[in-house]
Image (cartoon, rainbow, N blue to C red):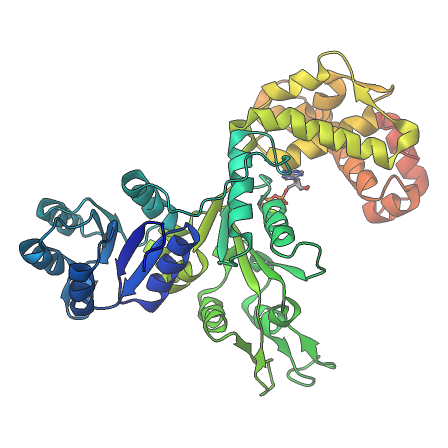
Length: 448
Ligand SMILES: Nc1ncnc2c1ncn2[C@@H]1O[C@H](COP(=O)(O)OP(=O)(O)OP(=O)(O)O)[C@@H](O)[C@H]1O
Ligand SMILES: [Mg+2]
């Protein structure tokens, strides 16, 4: 039965890749049949009108190429456009398949987005693509961020595993939290963030799975791991590329079985969570060189979201800057600040190598350092210039550079502590008096 949408046949014996492809294509609105052998595919393709065929070349009962050639001989109507999935490094084979009449190919490891691009280019999108470009912007006003927001709306209800990539500070965690909010509207569900790079392998295991009392020296109390904590909500793995290989195997098993056993325990506990992973490294080359498991890569990468760097979405710079300024003004109404002449526009000309995080800090700093209610270009960029003096060549003097670093650091800790001198001084490890003196010397105004 084909109700409207376009139909795609996947021929793939690998259970993880087949499932990932099926889930993603259904999400895009396609009707999908998934066959696991050349034999069963032959019968299905002969008896069904598909709009497209996605075929692994290596199948348990023959090659995809042989299947394609045989069907070409016998089918009464031309075969649908076919994309083959070929093994890593087998360019010769891919060329042979193209000669046979294949429309295109992807080489393992591949990104589902690339395959989807090829499918959409030839087959058009599936039926059910409810866009979201008319909604009020939440992440940004640029076309790229509006498209991204629309994607989040589209996938929120389906809970596919999602990988979010992008440069440091671009907003990967913000995107993950937005997807979480859309997935569980109006509900208090856990969002558990784990930095995979910050834990040793030994610690990671008890952190992820939890432990029973007495499981190891120091385990005085039983503790739930992050899988259990995320039950019913979202588990966000930050820097997934840093997850040790041994742990990747265990994660894969949890995703498969949806069961966890605490370290030192025996009870199997059922869990259900939505997985989002972030990375600022491309996983594909890591898969190719064996540092990241291929099966896990396909399992988690059903939807891939790329957060573009801020320099590629200029429209967002001023929009974000206005929001950050408004937020500080709201938090400190007695010190309200506004944009001075040309200050706001000057933000567009800076490349923001640290992305949104850098923009946010820049405005925080300017807000604190400004001596009057109008923010000036100097307020915005003096901190940046001193911290990045080497890069811009403006202030090679070591003393001035160190002064800039000191100032930027104190302002950051002050902001974090809401301007409270006592807490800031304690965090900086200096006395309140010394902090006051430094603030006076560096021209930092009091927040409260
Ligand atoms: N669209 C946005 N709207 C408002 N604030 C944002 C947005 N994107 C990012 N930010 C802010 O920028 C900072 C960095 O964002 P985030 O932590 O999500 O980046 P990231 O890509 O996860 O960075 P990293 O790779 O360093 O972990 C945060 O303070 C966040 O609040
Ligand atoms: Mg992050």
